[in-house]
Length: 244
Image (cartoon, rainbow, N blue to C red):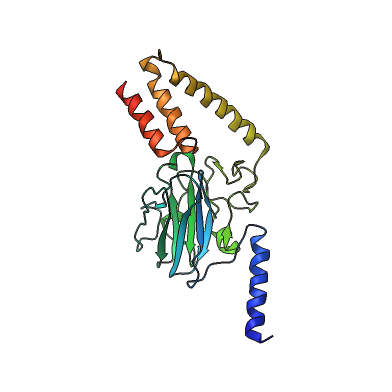
């Protein structure tokens, strides 16, 4: 086996071992790393790439966007925005070094956010916590290359609310500072689901009072954010509520 082929073989083995624990090495400019967009999550939630790398945001489920916070990217960079898409993927090439925070337009309110560090951390995103949801801190992302959603990697760039992972379980950065689930989250989500179901039942009653419209709209938005109804059904129900 030649030295070149041996290096390739060892590189493949190393990549497979790292992927098994949900953490990858930094993506070079020649690679095209992929961020999956699923039901209320980006995976990996934290990614480190070199300047000039093109990142592909691919839909795993539902309809989502990859939209940069205009005030949380390097000052010399342009804000990227895929718009809400329901199929296919979106690509963006990161040229300017620094920290980029981004979110999903339909699911920003439920904490669907992510962070990409290009080269080394820097810029406005390093000066304050992300306003929606949670992301790993930049040093953790750089150290590990990529941080998978729900992985037990220390470091959180926010002390805000939790978000759903691809396995459907809750995750929240708390006093542990990690990305693993905590026991009470499942129970809390169960209570929220029960409350949402009761509100949805109230919405379906023909004699519902106008005063309940605000709560019904919030329930509808939560069901859409959780991926329980698609875009078309969401729009129909929202129009019915607004007609009231």
